[in-house]
Image 1 (cartoon, rainbow, N blue to C red):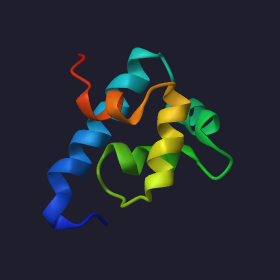
Image 2: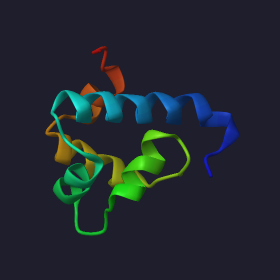
Image 3: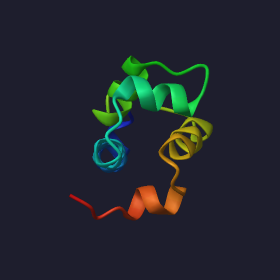
Length: 79
């Protein structure tokens, strides 16, 4: 569960992860594998839907899996 005070931020991050992942033609499972050994598609899904709180290191690993920087993720303005 995400902190209600930051729900808008979690949604922005989740939506941007989903958009970038799809622009790279990656499934949630593929992104999970690229992001680290402790990831699965359910975790990616929960983050994309702003249903799960996550640690900063998790966000960095997802960025690595997407081959982007944290700044790229937060400021993404794509489709």
